[in-house]
Image 1 (cartoon, rainbow, N blue to C red):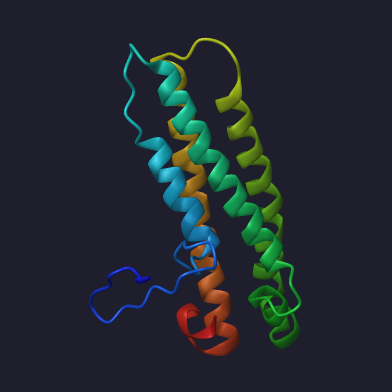
Image 2: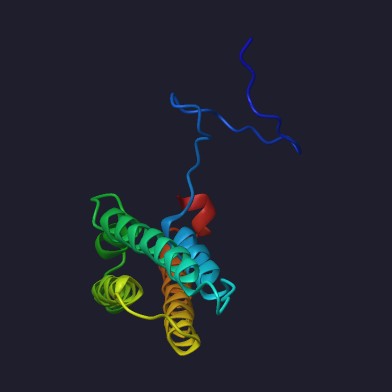
Length: 163
């Protein structure tokens, strides 16, 4: 007998063919979560390589989520493309969003590269990389807030309703 996972509060967690739970998580939210996790990883002086491995995994996941967000923003029916065609007055904000995409991709690549550098990991490297992760997370938060405003001004609906 096959059973699905127990869910509470009226939630339903559909299973994918591989048995994992299907989710429609927002890529920006996923990137922000992973960057926050990376910045808060514990650092143990006697196991610096374990910190570096965990940090690299988290920022690599964040980079993939950022790339997914950028890809989805270029789809014909994306909120940015709809705003561009429906509300020309929002073009400066749309352009800013697109310019930030390039910056975020570059910053995520640089963070992954720095986390992957061979050599000794010490407390100072941990502090520096953690600060970079937090700064990128904060920039993504501003980006998301602006996107929410663009969607609202285009559709007069909150992002959750508009897709």
